Image 1 (cartoon, protein in one colour):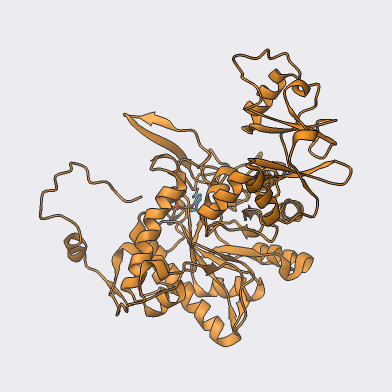
Image 2: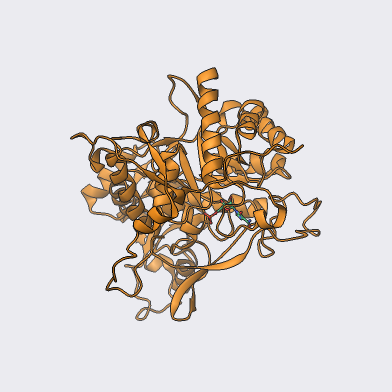
Length: 506
Ligand code: MZP
């Protein structure tokens, strides 16, 4: 006979936190949101942590390079999606890595015999207004000068004029030499009041560029998530079908964290794929698995699969119809509590801590806070980030309001057959039925603005709970289930608010 779990499948909105003693030191400015992403042993430091507990879903309508850059700048991590060719995903990762390394590889270069029209076209294409000039026009060619938008006037100068006649020539350029530290390079920029410093080797070949604006950007984003080479960190979704080719390509491109992306990760396919990564790269690769909804599946991926972290959630995603279509899944709060309990048990038994990520179904800030209080080390969100300027979809006006398209990986639009095992052997077969919908979400602002509100609420709640970090937050958490009546009581149902439509949380 089938085993029936007595407890009802529950979700986050059914819970509230009961405040604990707030001491004088419990102030938002003292709260740390740093959280581990890789497994670690008791007493050791995790190899990889993020500075805010937010990661993006590995989805076409969420995680492109722009999103990855925006989120890494404030301390989180985006998972570029794997429902694209290996080459496309590698290019996305490479774009994030190129974005800002202190020392940036120049990707917008001119030859001296190019015209100003060529320079304008390149500026339009790359968005970069500072263009080194090298003998052969390559990023590592012999440096002869630099052209910026201050050197010519698009509407006044003759655009067939040659770059060599307008550029600042090498003799007048302030440059650094290979081996210079980033700090010294920045100080040269400061001393000479320059915006950009080319770095040249002893044969005058261009090595990289250092920008003043990157220094300021770095100082304004103290939680920025950087790799050892001071490049922004980026994650990558991978699948159990082409991992033997995809994983090496992504690692070579610089992906910092990998995550097997599957609607149901309690499979031998996933265990084998993670073990393959371990065998090939040892502990140097950080690779997560999922999704799971109970303790057995967590233990399987943690123990047999040696996953670095495990992702929780089936059927709770805002665009997900897996529960309706296939009858599998679990209320997200119940799933998370079951997995967290097993994680803690596993830690007590083995001394190995495996971070847990709550993935999907977080439809407002309170739910994010409750998920973290319940023991998620970090949360993965799709809809939340799809609503920002930086998601990769074009904006569209519907009924006078601006929206962005947001579609599930199991929708016909995404055709991510690798994520949903429906027996398809190739892209030609694609999905036999949809597990996700194609939808729209309102645009709410930039990643920085939207997360800043959520994080302010989170820090404030953590102080209410007498906690200065996420571990203390979970350890201190006392949650109560609420009745429908107390849910109503928590709103503004008995008064008439002046604003017709109260702004809703994202
Ligand atoms: P949400 O943050 O929009 O509620 O949920 C995002 C999560 O839903 C993703 O991280 C992924 O786990 C899941 N997802 C993505 N596509 C589908 C689908 O098409 C889906 N069913 O369930």
